[in-house]
Amino acid sequence: MKTLLKISTILLAVCLTSCSTIFRAKTQTINVFSNAQKATVTVNDSVYSLPAKVKLLRSKKPVTLSYQSDNKQFDTIVPGKSGPLFYLGNLITSPFFGVGYWVDLMNHKRFQYKKNIFINDKDTLEVYEYKAEKYIAKRNITDSVKVDDLYAFYKRNYFKDQEKLKRNQEKEFKRYNPAVGKFRFFIAPPTLSLIGFSKKNPNIEQFNNFVGGVGFGFGGDYFYKENKFLTLELSNRVNQFDDFWWSGHDVLARKLDVSFRKAHKINRLEYSYGISCTYTDYEYALPWSSLQQFWDDDERNYSSASYSTIGLSSLINYQLTSVMFVGVRYNPSVYSFRTTGNGFDYEHVISIDYRLKF
Image 1 (cartoon, rainbow, N blue to C red):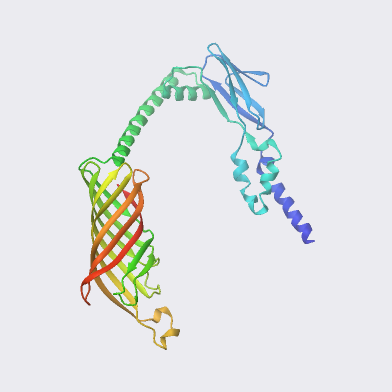
Image 2: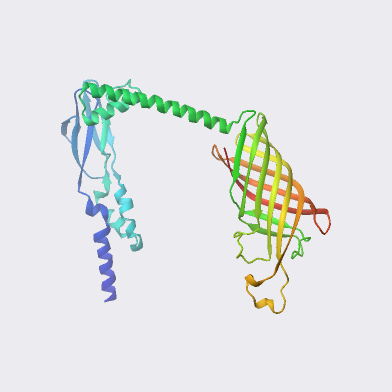
């Protein structure tokens, strides 16, 4: 009984979900038109005066349209391709091993030809003239006033689009090749960071690394010479992925960094180096007592400390698009200022860098 039910389910899926087989006819009607005064097209030994509606049998085999007018005579090949109904309509059969696709693959209803075919009979048309002629021929417009209006409309839009394209190209060129005196503002969304802490911090017995994904940055670039610029950046990094009050942790640090770098640009590659000052807000869990080891994280006792460091800052990134940059940033701290005493002390922030520059 169960086997019969499974077979019935599959058969039902086959019958209901093979879209091309059910919803499409064996034939398709295409529209063929030309901008010649008088022209014909021959398809499968049948001659049609243009504009014409031609009925074709669906198949993957290409169809040859033999065009003839007073000016030209040539053949146009129209290929048959699987339509979107075949690909999208059968997605529902994926849980049934794509049974709808298999059914449609066994017949030619899945194929379709280009619905509207325009045959240009004139060789010296401008782009806007070609578009206007195609629109007029498709709708078989003969009114001279309407024809003139359509030519004016397509000509006006064409030159408007050309001006817009030119402005966009100039803007893109300037973004890839900033001029001297150019200022760029940028933002740096959260990315993965490797944050290293020295053993001078509580709860850290030896130098240790933590991975974090919370943070944000912003700043600006100023081009003082060709392919050379100065960068001022403010960024915040956290050694956690969920920087919220309910998150349990042993060590939680927020690093607020101000960096000033000198940068060089070589085509799409940028690299910079400079100094940084970092303020760290450090929070840590107090040691467990014999009674506390069974308590929840919410009941743990925490303490906090803060300190500042100075060090270096470096960044190398690559310009993917006119505004998008990706790379690696390395900020090592070499000297710290703590309530327990100042001194040389190494920490770092190594992060994947992703920024948008405007």
